[in-house]
Length: 215
Image (cartoon, rainbow, N blue to C red):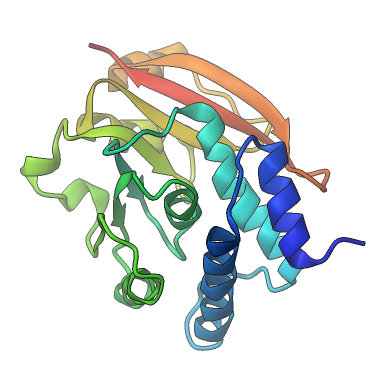
């Protein structure tokens, strides 16, 4: 039976991500704070440590199947909530420049607390709604992620304006969800690829959808 650290290390490896001891330590500091804050504010309904690692952390890291992280790449995470997928992605790839959008003030406070605790740099939290972001951020990002949006169509419509031409929207959804060409065309996006996967050490099926903003 694997312990939680081995589960994270080996699970990430299955997703093609090699985590250092420091990065694994950072994830567990984050999860300890998540547990503590969840007693006061509603951050996650999942409490079992193994489930949190698989369904939150590994699910977040699976987004990296959809794009190639590189130094200075700008990523916008819409509706960050408790920080998934943005914080695990940032821990795994510290060279990314990340903006998290979370309109609930208490959740935004938690995100800032984690950023300070882990001494993360080049990452910010904007406590507003995506549709109220300043115009200066339009066409500013290479990657947009979202995990909490009710449907893909609304996530694509909300995220596309903030992408540079040829930028990517990366979404993780249940295997049954689909999107039609008309909604994509309306948002000025094209389907780049869809990657079906089962999260490591589980039977939890996901699909990583990658949409490209038309040039």
